[in-house]
Length: 459
Image (cartoon, rainbow, N blue to C red):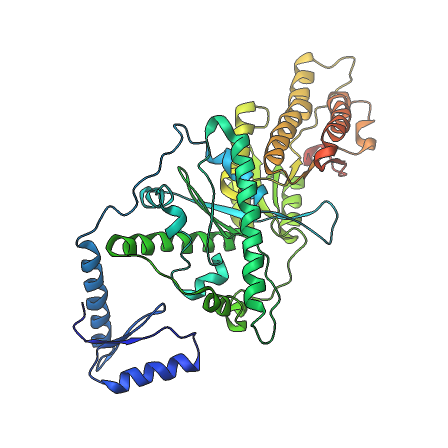
Protein backbone atom coordinates (compact mmCIF):
# COMPACT_ATOMS: atom_id res chain seq x y z
CA UNK A 1 0.00 0.00 0.00
CA UNK A 2 2.86 2.40 0.77
CA UNK A 3 5.20 1.13 -2.02
CA UNK A 4 8.25 0.84 0.24
CA UNK A 5 7.97 4.43 1.49
CA UNK A 6 7.80 3.27 5.11
CA UNK A 7 10.09 1.11 7.20
CA UNK A 8 8.43 -1.69 9.20
CA UNK A 9 9.58 -2.14 12.81
CA UNK A 10 8.60 -5.49 14.40
CA UNK A 11 6.89 -5.40 17.77
CA UNK A 12 9.17 -4.77 20.71
CA UNK A 13 8.06 -3.65 24.16
CA UNK A 14 8.45 0.12 24.60
CA UNK A 15 11.84 1.22 25.82
CA UNK A 16 15.45 1.40 24.74
CA UNK A 17 15.35 -1.83 22.70
CA UNK A 18 12.47 -0.48 20.62
CA UNK A 19 14.33 2.79 20.03
CA UNK A 20 17.43 0.89 18.90
CA UNK A 21 15.47 -1.28 16.51
CA UNK A 22 13.64 1.72 15.04
CA UNK A 23 17.02 3.44 14.47
CA UNK A 24 18.40 0.34 12.76
CA UNK A 25 15.43 0.11 10.38
CA UNK A 26 15.75 3.80 9.52
CA UNK A 27 19.50 3.58 8.95
CA UNK A 28 18.98 0.80 6.42
CA UNK A 29 17.04 3.25 4.24
CA UNK A 30 17.15 6.90 5.37
CA UNK A 31 14.95 7.87 2.40
CA UNK A 32 11.80 6.42 3.98
CA UNK A 33 9.03 8.87 4.80
CA UNK A 34 8.32 7.22 8.14
CA UNK A 35 8.22 4.10 10.26
CA UNK A 36 5.34 1.78 11.09
CA UNK A 37 5.86 0.28 14.55
CA UNK A 38 3.74 -2.86 14.63
CA UNK A 39 1.19 -2.83 17.47
CA UNK A 40 2.28 0.70 18.41
CA UNK A 41 1.62 3.20 15.63
CA UNK A 42 3.04 5.23 12.78
CA UNK A 43 5.67 7.98 12.62
CA UNK A 44 6.37 10.26 9.65
CA UNK A 45 9.43 12.38 8.92
CA UNK A 46 10.07 15.48 6.86
CA UNK A 47 12.45 18.35 6.27
CA UNK A 48 10.24 20.45 8.53
CA UNK A 49 7.15 20.10 10.71
CA UNK A 50 4.74 20.86 7.87
CA UNK A 51 6.15 18.13 5.61
CA UNK A 52 6.07 15.58 8.44
CA UNK A 53 2.47 16.52 9.20
CA UNK A 54 1.36 16.35 5.57
CA UNK A 55 2.98 12.94 5.18
CA UNK A 56 1.10 11.74 8.26
CA UNK A 57 -2.23 12.93 6.82
CA UNK A 58 -1.44 11.29 3.47
CA UNK A 59 -0.46 7.98 5.09
CA UNK A 60 -3.53 7.81 7.31
CA UNK A 61 -5.79 8.81 4.39
CA UNK A 62 -4.29 6.04 2.26
CA UNK A 63 -4.98 3.50 5.03
CA UNK A 64 -8.56 4.71 5.36
CA UNK A 65 -9.07 4.46 1.59
CA UNK A 66 -7.79 0.89 1.62
CA UNK A 67 -10.12 -0.06 4.45
CA UNK A 68 -13.07 1.32 2.48
CA UNK A 69 -12.41 -1.00 -0.47
CA UNK A 70 -13.67 -4.53 -0.90
CA UNK A 71 -15.23 -4.65 2.55
CA UNK A 72 -17.11 -7.81 3.39
CA UNK A 73 -20.05 -8.14 5.76
CA UNK A 74 -17.98 -7.94 8.89
CA UNK A 75 -20.12 -9.48 11.59
CA UNK A 76 -22.99 -11.75 10.52
CA UNK A 77 -25.54 -11.38 13.32
CA UNK A 78 -26.41 -14.06 15.83
CA UNK A 79 -29.98 -14.84 16.82
CA UNK A 80 -31.19 -12.62 19.65
CA UNK A 81 -34.24 -12.71 21.95
CA UNK A 82 -37.27 -10.85 20.62
CA UNK A 83 -37.27 -8.46 23.60
CA UNK A 84 -33.97 -7.25 25.07
CA UNK A 85 -34.10 -6.19 28.72
CA UNK A 86 -33.82 -2.52 29.65
CA UNK A 87 -30.47 -0.96 30.55
CA UNK A 88 -31.70 -0.03 34.04
CA UNK A 89 -32.48 -3.71 34.74
CA UNK A 90 -29.33 -5.15 33.21
CA UNK A 91 -26.71 -2.80 34.67
CA UNK A 92 -27.21 -3.70 38.38
CA UNK A 93 -27.07 -7.41 37.57
CA UNK A 94 -23.76 -6.98 35.75
CA UNK A 95 -22.39 -4.73 38.46
CA UNK A 96 -23.16 -7.31 41.09
CA UNK A 97 -21.65 -10.10 39.00
CA UNK A 98 -18.46 -8.06 38.54
CA UNK A 99 -17.92 -7.47 42.27
CA UNK A 100 -15.74 -9.26 44.81
CA UNK A 101 -16.22 -9.76 48.52
CA UNK A 102 -13.83 -7.64 50.56
CA UNK A 103 -11.56 -10.02 52.49
CA UNK A 104 -10.60 -7.30 54.96
CA UNK A 105 -14.09 -6.14 55.98
CA UNK A 106 -16.89 -8.59 56.73
CA UNK A 107 -19.98 -7.92 54.65
CA UNK A 108 -18.22 -5.39 52.41
CA UNK A 109 -17.76 -5.69 48.65
CA UNK A 110 -15.22 -4.37 46.18
CA UNK A 111 -17.48 -2.80 43.58
CA UNK A 112 -16.93 -1.10 40.24
CA UNK A 113 -18.65 1.81 38.52
CA UNK A 114 -20.18 1.16 35.07
CA UNK A 115 -20.26 3.42 32.00
CA UNK A 116 -22.59 2.34 29.18
CA UNK A 117 -22.05 2.89 25.45
CA UNK A 118 -24.10 1.82 22.44
CA UNK A 119 -24.74 2.67 18.80
CA UNK A 120 -24.97 0.94 15.40
CA UNK A 121 -21.26 0.03 15.21
CA UNK A 122 -21.18 -1.28 18.78
CA UNK A 123 -24.35 -3.31 18.28
CA UNK A 124 -23.04 -4.85 15.05
CA UNK A 125 -19.93 -5.87 16.99
CA UNK A 126 -21.56 -7.34 20.11
CA UNK A 127 -24.34 -9.02 18.11
CA UNK A 128 -21.97 -10.88 15.80
CA UNK A 129 -22.23 -14.65 15.62
CA UNK A 130 -18.43 -14.94 16.00
CA UNK A 131 -18.13 -12.40 18.82
CA UNK A 132 -16.48 -14.94 21.10
CA UNK A 133 -13.63 -15.24 18.59
CA UNK A 134 -12.82 -11.68 17.58
CA UNK A 135 -13.73 -9.99 20.87
CA UNK A 136 -11.34 -12.26 22.78
CA UNK A 137 -8.39 -11.84 20.39
CA UNK A 138 -6.68 -9.24 22.61
CA UNK A 139 -6.17 -5.51 22.88
CA UNK A 140 -5.62 -3.18 19.93
CA UNK A 141 -2.43 -1.70 21.35
CA UNK A 142 -0.49 -3.15 24.30
CA UNK A 143 -0.76 -0.24 26.73
CA UNK A 144 -4.56 -0.54 26.66
CA UNK A 145 -4.24 -3.68 28.76
CA UNK A 146 -3.64 -1.68 31.94
CA UNK A 147 -7.09 -0.12 31.56
CA UNK A 148 -9.18 -2.92 30.02
CA UNK A 149 -7.26 -6.14 30.69
CA UNK A 150 -6.54 -8.37 27.69
CA UNK A 151 -10.12 -9.39 26.92
CA UNK A 152 -13.62 -8.16 27.72
CA UNK A 153 -16.26 -10.20 29.50
CA UNK A 154 -18.86 -11.45 27.02
CA UNK A 155 -22.28 -12.33 28.45
CA UNK A 156 -25.43 -13.74 26.81
CA UNK A 157 -28.15 -11.42 25.54
CA UNK A 158 -30.52 -10.39 28.37
CA UNK A 159 -34.14 -11.33 27.68
CA UNK A 160 -36.82 -9.14 29.23
CA UNK A 161 -38.92 -12.09 30.34
CA UNK A 162 -36.03 -14.07 31.81
CA UNK A 163 -33.80 -11.79 33.86
CA UNK A 164 -33.31 -14.53 36.46
CA UNK A 165 -31.55 -16.68 33.85
CA UNK A 166 -29.50 -13.70 32.71
CA UNK A 167 -28.37 -13.08 36.29
CA UNK A 168 -27.30 -16.71 36.63
CA UNK A 169 -25.46 -16.64 33.29
CA UNK A 170 -23.75 -13.32 34.03
CA UNK A 171 -22.54 -14.56 37.40
CA UNK A 172 -21.16 -17.74 35.85
CA UNK A 173 -19.40 -15.86 33.05
CA UNK A 174 -17.91 -13.34 35.49
CA UNK A 175 -16.69 -16.12 37.77
CA UNK A 176 -15.10 -17.90 34.81
CA UNK A 177 -13.43 -14.62 33.73
CA UNK A 178 -11.90 -14.20 37.19
CA UNK A 179 -10.60 -17.78 37.19
CA UNK A 180 -9.09 -17.34 33.71
CA UNK A 181 -7.37 -14.14 34.77
CA UNK A 182 -5.91 -15.79 37.87
CA UNK A 183 -4.62 -18.69 35.75
CA UNK A 184 -3.14 -16.22 33.22
CA UNK A 185 -1.34 -14.42 36.03
CA UNK A 186 -0.02 -17.65 37.57
CA UNK A 187 1.30 -18.93 34.22
CA UNK A 188 3.15 -15.77 33.34
CA UNK A 189 4.26 -14.74 36.80
CA UNK A 190 6.14 -18.04 37.09
CA UNK A 191 8.53 -16.66 34.45
CA UNK A 192 8.69 -13.10 35.78
CA UNK A 193 11.80 -11.76 37.47
CA UNK A 194 11.13 -10.33 39.93
CA UNK A 195 7.71 -11.89 40.62
CA UNK A 196 4.73 -9.57 40.28
CA UNK A 197 1.84 -8.88 42.62
CA UNK A 198 -1.54 -9.76 41.07
CA UNK A 199 -3.96 -6.97 40.22
CA UNK A 200 -7.66 -7.43 40.89
CA UNK A 201 -9.05 -10.00 38.44
CA UNK A 202 -12.36 -8.29 37.65
CA UNK A 203 -13.22 -7.40 34.03
CA UNK A 204 -13.00 -3.79 32.87
CA UNK A 205 -15.17 -4.14 29.74
CA UNK A 206 -18.41 -6.10 29.39
CA UNK A 207 -20.06 -6.83 26.03
CA UNK A 208 -23.82 -7.40 26.06
CA UNK A 209 -25.46 -8.63 22.82
CA UNK A 210 -28.57 -6.67 21.98
CA UNK A 211 -27.63 -3.81 24.29
CA UNK A 212 -24.06 -2.50 23.91
CA UNK A 213 -20.91 -2.39 26.04
CA UNK A 214 -19.89 -1.25 29.50
CA UNK A 215 -16.61 0.21 30.73
CA UNK A 216 -15.85 -0.61 34.38
CA UNK A 217 -13.61 1.13 36.87
CA UNK A 218 -13.13 1.98 40.52
CA UNK A 219 -14.34 5.50 39.71
CA UNK A 220 -16.59 6.98 37.07
CA UNK A 221 -13.51 8.53 35.45
CA UNK A 222 -11.82 5.13 35.16
CA UNK A 223 -15.03 3.56 33.84
CA UNK A 224 -15.28 6.23 31.13
CA UNK A 225 -11.65 5.67 30.10
CA UNK A 226 -12.27 1.91 29.81
CA UNK A 227 -15.41 2.58 27.74
CA UNK A 228 -13.52 4.98 25.45
CA UNK A 229 -10.85 2.34 24.83
CA UNK A 230 -13.51 -0.30 24.22
CA UNK A 231 -15.23 1.90 21.64
CA UNK A 232 -11.91 2.42 19.90
CA UNK A 233 -11.31 -1.34 19.93
CA UNK A 234 -14.69 -1.90 18.28
CA UNK A 235 -13.76 0.50 15.46
CA UNK A 236 -10.27 -0.93 14.92
CA UNK A 237 -11.27 -4.60 15.08
CA UNK A 238 -14.23 -3.94 12.78
CA UNK A 239 -11.91 -2.43 10.16
CA UNK A 240 -9.38 -5.25 10.57
CA UNK A 241 -12.04 -7.93 10.20
CA UNK A 242 -13.47 -6.16 7.15
CA UNK A 243 -10.29 -6.73 5.13
CA UNK A 244 -8.69 -9.67 6.93
CA UNK A 245 -8.49 -10.88 10.51
CA UNK A 246 -7.55 -8.98 13.65
CA UNK A 247 -4.54 -10.21 15.60
CA UNK A 248 -3.15 -8.96 18.89
CA UNK A 249 -0.02 -10.04 20.79
CA UNK A 250 0.76 -13.30 22.58
CA UNK A 251 -0.32 -13.31 26.21
CA UNK A 252 3.25 -13.35 27.58
CA UNK A 253 3.97 -10.03 25.86
CA UNK A 254 0.67 -8.58 27.04
CA UNK A 255 1.55 -9.70 30.58
CA UNK A 256 4.86 -7.87 30.35
CA UNK A 257 3.03 -4.69 29.40
CA UNK A 258 0.25 -5.05 31.98
CA UNK A 259 2.71 -5.58 34.82
CA UNK A 260 5.48 -3.27 33.59
CA UNK A 261 6.20 -0.77 36.35
CA UNK A 262 6.19 2.18 33.94
CA UNK A 263 2.74 1.23 32.68
CA UNK A 264 1.39 0.78 36.20
CA UNK A 265 2.74 4.23 37.08
CA UNK A 266 0.24 5.70 34.59
CA UNK A 267 -2.56 4.61 36.90
CA UNK A 268 -1.12 6.54 39.82
CA UNK A 269 -0.54 5.38 43.38
CA UNK A 270 -3.21 7.29 45.27
CA UNK A 271 -4.60 5.56 48.35
CA UNK A 272 -8.20 4.58 47.80
CA UNK A 273 -10.78 6.37 49.92
CA UNK A 274 -13.18 4.42 52.17
CA UNK A 275 -16.16 4.64 49.81
CA UNK A 276 -14.27 4.24 46.53
CA UNK A 277 -16.38 2.30 44.05
CA UNK A 278 -19.62 2.91 45.98
CA UNK A 279 -22.66 4.80 44.65
CA UNK A 280 -24.69 6.92 47.07
CA UNK A 281 -28.11 8.34 46.20
CA UNK A 282 -29.28 11.22 48.40
CA UNK A 283 -32.81 12.65 48.37
CA UNK A 284 -33.52 16.22 49.39
CA UNK A 285 -29.95 16.82 48.28
CA UNK A 286 -30.26 20.54 47.58
CA UNK A 287 -31.18 21.39 51.19
CA UNK A 288 -28.64 22.18 53.89
CA UNK A 289 -28.55 18.71 55.42
CA UNK A 290 -28.66 16.97 52.04
CA UNK A 291 -25.86 19.09 50.59
CA UNK A 292 -23.68 18.59 53.67
CA UNK A 293 -24.30 14.85 53.44
CA UNK A 294 -23.37 14.88 49.75
CA UNK A 295 -20.09 16.69 50.45
CA UNK A 296 -19.21 14.20 53.18
CA UNK A 297 -19.83 11.22 50.92
CA UNK A 298 -17.87 12.84 48.09
CA UNK A 299 -14.91 13.42 50.42
CA UNK A 300 -15.05 9.71 51.30
CA UNK A 301 -14.75 8.73 47.63
CA UNK A 302 -18.35 7.81 46.74
CA UNK A 303 -19.99 8.53 43.40
CA UNK A 304 -23.13 10.60 43.94
CA UNK A 305 -26.65 10.66 42.54
CA UNK A 306 -28.39 13.73 43.98
CA UNK A 307 -32.19 13.96 43.90
CA UNK A 308 -34.24 17.05 44.65
CA UNK A 309 -37.44 18.63 43.35
CA UNK A 310 -35.54 21.92 42.88
CA UNK A 311 -33.92 21.00 39.56
CA UNK A 312 -31.80 24.15 39.23
CA UNK A 313 -30.41 23.88 42.76
CA UNK A 314 -29.57 20.19 42.52
CA UNK A 315 -27.90 20.62 39.12
CA UNK A 316 -25.74 23.42 40.55
CA UNK A 317 -24.70 21.25 43.49
CA UNK A 318 -24.07 18.26 41.22
CA UNK A 319 -21.85 20.36 38.94
CA UNK A 320 -19.81 21.53 41.94
CA UNK A 321 -19.31 17.98 43.24
CA UNK A 322 -18.92 16.13 39.94
CA UNK A 323 -22.13 14.25 40.64
CA UNK A 324 -25.30 13.21 38.82
CA UNK A 325 -28.11 15.68 39.46
CA UNK A 326 -31.69 14.43 39.14
CA UNK A 327 -34.77 16.62 39.34
CA UNK A 328 -37.56 14.58 40.89
CA UNK A 329 -40.35 14.50 43.44
CA UNK A 330 -40.19 11.77 46.11
CA UNK A 331 -43.96 12.06 46.65
CA UNK A 332 -44.49 10.78 43.10
CA UNK A 333 -43.97 7.04 42.62
CA UNK A 334 -43.10 7.30 38.92
CA UNK A 335 -40.57 10.03 39.67
CA UNK A 336 -38.84 7.87 42.29
CA UNK A 337 -38.69 4.88 39.93
CA UNK A 338 -37.28 7.07 37.17
CA UNK A 339 -34.63 8.53 39.50
CA UNK A 340 -33.35 5.10 40.53
CA UNK A 341 -33.44 3.89 36.92
CA UNK A 342 -31.38 6.93 35.90
CA UNK A 343 -28.82 6.25 38.64
CA UNK A 344 -28.56 2.58 37.60
CA UNK A 345 -28.10 3.55 33.94
CA UNK A 346 -25.48 6.17 34.82
CA UNK A 347 -23.42 4.33 37.45
CA UNK A 348 -24.55 0.71 37.13
CA UNK A 349 -26.40 0.58 40.44
CA UNK A 350 -26.84 2.01 43.92
CA UNK A 351 -25.16 0.93 47.18
CA UNK A 352 -26.07 3.62 49.72
CA UNK A 353 -29.33 5.54 49.89
CA UNK A 354 -29.83 8.50 52.23
CA UNK A 355 -33.56 9.18 52.36
CA UNK A 356 -33.32 12.76 53.53
CA UNK A 357 -36.16 14.67 51.84
CA UNK A 358 -38.64 16.02 54.36
CA UNK A 359 -40.32 19.07 55.82
CA UNK A 360 -41.57 20.21 59.23
CA UNK A 361 -45.24 21.18 59.53
CA UNK A 362 -46.33 22.67 62.83
CA UNK A 363 -49.57 22.70 64.75
CA UNK A 364 -51.30 21.27 67.80
CA UNK A 365 -52.28 17.71 66.92
CA UNK A 366 -55.82 18.18 68.23
CA UNK A 367 -56.41 21.24 66.10
CA UNK A 368 -54.32 20.85 62.95
CA UNK A 369 -56.10 20.62 59.61
CA UNK A 370 -56.33 17.12 58.13
CA UNK A 371 -54.88 18.39 54.85
CA UNK A 372 -51.65 19.34 56.65
CA UNK A 373 -51.45 15.92 58.29
CA UNK A 374 -51.92 14.19 54.94
CA UNK A 375 -49.24 16.35 53.30
CA UNK A 376 -46.84 15.59 56.15
CA UNK A 377 -47.50 11.86 55.99
CA UNK A 378 -47.05 11.92 52.20
CA UNK A 379 -43.59 13.51 52.40
CA UNK A 380 -42.35 12.33 55.81
CA UNK A 381 -43.60 8.74 55.63
CA UNK A 382 -44.88 7.49 52.29
CA UNK A 383 -42.11 9.17 50.27
CA UNK A 384 -39.47 7.42 52.38
CA UNK A 385 -41.30 4.14 51.91
CA UNK A 386 -41.20 4.61 48.12
CA UNK A 387 -37.49 5.40 48.23
CA UNK A 388 -36.81 2.38 50.45
CA UNK A 389 -38.66 0.04 48.07
CA UNK A 390 -36.80 1.38 45.03
CA UNK A 391 -33.49 1.11 46.86
CA UNK A 392 -34.08 -2.48 47.95
CA UNK A 393 -35.06 -3.45 44.39
CA UNK A 394 -31.79 -2.06 42.96
CA UNK A 395 -29.68 -3.59 45.74
CA UNK A 396 -31.31 -7.00 45.36
CA UNK A 397 -30.58 -6.91 41.63
CA UNK A 398 -26.91 -6.37 42.43
CA UNK A 399 -26.89 -9.06 45.10
CA UNK A 400 -24.14 -7.39 47.12
CA UNK A 401 -26.15 -5.83 49.93
CA UNK A 402 -26.34 -2.13 50.65
CA UNK A 403 -27.11 0.57 53.17
CA UNK A 404 -30.37 2.52 53.53
CA UNK A 405 -30.32 5.52 55.87
CA UNK A 406 -33.51 7.42 56.73
CA UNK A 407 -33.02 10.80 58.42
CA UNK A 408 -35.31 12.11 61.15
CA UNK A 409 -35.23 15.14 63.41
CA UNK A 410 -33.94 14.70 66.95
CA UNK A 411 -36.33 13.43 69.61
CA UNK A 412 -36.13 16.80 71.31
CA UNK A 413 -37.52 18.63 68.27
CA UNK A 414 -40.41 16.16 67.85
CA UNK A 415 -41.51 16.55 71.49
CA UNK A 416 -42.44 20.21 71.08
CA UNK A 417 -46.18 20.92 71.66
CA UNK A 418 -46.70 21.96 68.02
CA UNK A 419 -44.61 19.20 66.41
CA UNK A 420 -47.44 16.69 65.96
CA UNK A 421 -47.84 16.94 62.17
CA UNK A 422 -44.15 16.17 61.77
CA UNK A 423 -43.61 13.80 64.68
CA UNK A 424 -46.44 11.41 63.83
CA UNK A 425 -45.29 10.33 60.35
CA UNK A 426 -41.63 10.33 61.34
CA UNK A 427 -42.25 8.11 64.34
CA UNK A 428 -44.17 5.76 62.06
CA UNK A 429 -41.13 5.80 59.78
CA UNK A 430 -38.99 4.56 62.67
CA UNK A 431 -41.18 1.47 62.91
CA UNK A 432 -41.04 1.06 59.12
CA UNK A 433 -37.22 1.23 59.17
CA UNK A 434 -37.09 -1.45 61.86
CA UNK A 435 -39.38 -3.67 59.80
CA UNK A 436 -37.29 -3.13 56.65
CA UNK A 437 -34.20 -4.09 58.65
CA UNK A 438 -35.72 -7.38 59.76
CA UNK A 439 -37.01 -8.19 56.26
CA UNK A 440 -33.69 -7.56 54.50
CA UNK A 441 -31.13 -8.71 57.08
CA UNK A 442 -30.54 -12.02 55.32
CA UNK A 443 -29.51 -10.18 52.16
CA UNK A 444 -26.88 -8.05 53.98
CA UNK A 445 -28.83 -4.80 53.76
CA UNK A 446 -28.31 -2.30 56.55
CA UNK A 447 -31.30 0.04 57.04
CA UNK A 448 -30.41 2.75 59.56
CA UNK A 449 -31.88 5.98 60.90
CA UNK A 450 -30.04 9.19 61.72
CA UNK A 451 -31.26 12.17 63.73
CA UNK A 452 -29.46 15.34 62.66
CA UNK A 453 -30.09 18.29 64.92
CA UNK A 454 -31.62 21.06 62.80
CA UNK A 455 -34.24 23.74 62.92
CA UNK A 456 -37.50 23.42 61.00
CA UNK A 457 -36.12 25.80 58.38
CA UNK A 458 -33.15 23.50 57.76
CA UNK A 459 -35.20 20.36 57.08
